[in-house]
Length: 214
Image (cartoon, rainbow, N blue to C red):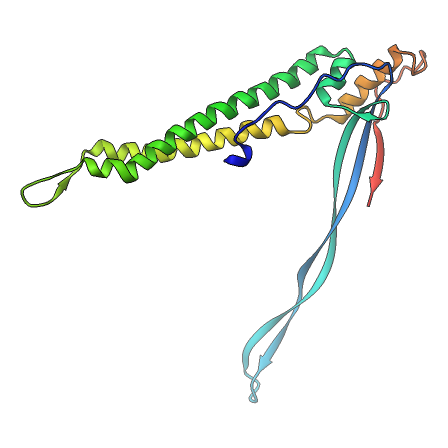
């Protein structure tokens, strides 16, 4: 939990410089090698009876594409929240801010639950067993609630850890609104307003700049 136990909002606050906004999409091709079965060999004894088989494998190269995108003010990469704020789309900027703020809250609440659950679980293992009383035959009689408390603490700790991790992931997500086309349309409208695009450009959509890397 220590690696994601303290989520923070990303640094924002980039001001408008009057430069155009741009969206760059990169498609990166990754390759991998895997073994594929290409056949079998039968093994027979001197009488021709089948005694076993063995498989034949060969290396095969595969590939897959990973698409990444980034928003810019001029040639400077900026955060998505600042991008939409500069473009005048305060509604989307607020959606991103709320998404991240919710992640911080989830992280804090989850950590609290995890700590409380961990304390109960530890108590269930080491402290509650000491609360039993021996009867005249030497048998230890422990309250049933101690077992339930220890088990409940373990479950609470696991749930809290999951909530904390989910909250941390929200704050670290690169694109809370993962829609490069929406960003490209926003950039187009803004650039038209500041005179970086022809006034008679009536296209409703503009494809973001795409670069392919291998």
